[in-house]
Picture 1 (cartoon, helix red, strand yellow):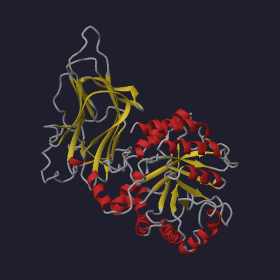
Picture 2 (cartoon, one colour):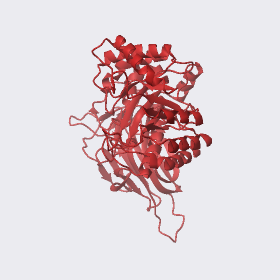
Picture 3 (cartoon, one colour):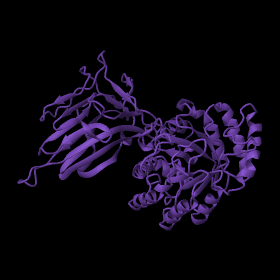
Picture 4 (tube, one colour):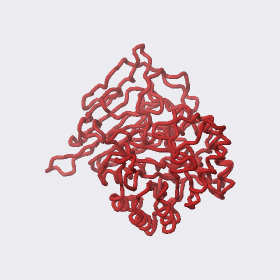
Length: 529
């Protein structure tokens, strides 16, 4: 079952690609325990240690002798050795990482212990819980121990917070809960102890790889979510059975492949989560709704009374324009009995204060008509992250004024890999997963915003024009689904794009040939949960 349900421990909100250097703050550790006195030795690069060197290295120091402290969100993709002390069998491998360079431990030498220690401190203070995640791959037997250790006293003593007894898997995400140490300033290390050789007449082989380390904000623990759910308010997240993935349809989309996929998934007990269609796809949307009632239908009319317009007129007063805009869209929306109507599309230049009033009034009008809206539809990279919390009044209105019994108005965002050859699931926090940056500031101000549904109404690898193989798209879907499982406010995403290119955009991709493989992939993924 999906991690995003109440069985999920956390909602991960932010991962940064950059690292910030700062002085240790004048604060005490959790429980009012003072941070131990620090006597750092100036270090600027990673230091290899001998195989039998198990002594903890000194923390990394600034030029003035003060300790280097990393603040959250924190990430290291291991493009270099900088900041790490490696001893034993660890080495940086430029060829075998998940994405380029990564750390590799040779498992051939038996009965040894190898350390990989991060030299700076890591500050876990703040209002949120935290979680360590990294990619790992390994072929180590059950005689071997893979451990994650932390130190709360600068490296004098260490606590094992995670252990694996052997590992036999290809690249996968591994997560370690750091909630218990919220408020502490820690040090971090990886420790691998190999056991005795079991087959003495054959050479020992195997190894262990790690890459793409993140320490991420986690806003809601399991207990907090259970408490919130017990209030009998709106649900957090969609039904467990539906898939995270949906489809984005444009005019010219073929009805049969889409309906066949929806029927197949519904019959297997894992209905297609959502389907979005634009003008010209009304018949397909209605057909999907008939064969898969659990699928959320989203509709966006490309045409209103002004012709083909994506954005309202900001020269009008926002409340007056909301009335006019919805009145103009009404006859087109009447063609589909959608669960949600997308209000606009990538209107990045609208001032946020105008947008707040416009969106609130649009929700009021639509609610009176029994319709539910998806708001904003910001393009990838918009708006500025620091400004996103200004939209909190829109979320508050949605929380206070359900559009239908048991349903709220929702939010639409877009996400692409942007770079021509980048999968959306591997495009980073500022592109494919930037919603986490938005929600870091928003949820700190309005925690209940976690209940407002968010649909990523356009999601695709590259820039939406680059042709990927169906195998790559299927891999992207699974990886993105795994990522979004941590974000309980995300109710689904619409994969771009099903349908032939539009005349003015002749190079849009058409994923119709990939639908059978996507069906196989989704059934395999959800069947294994």
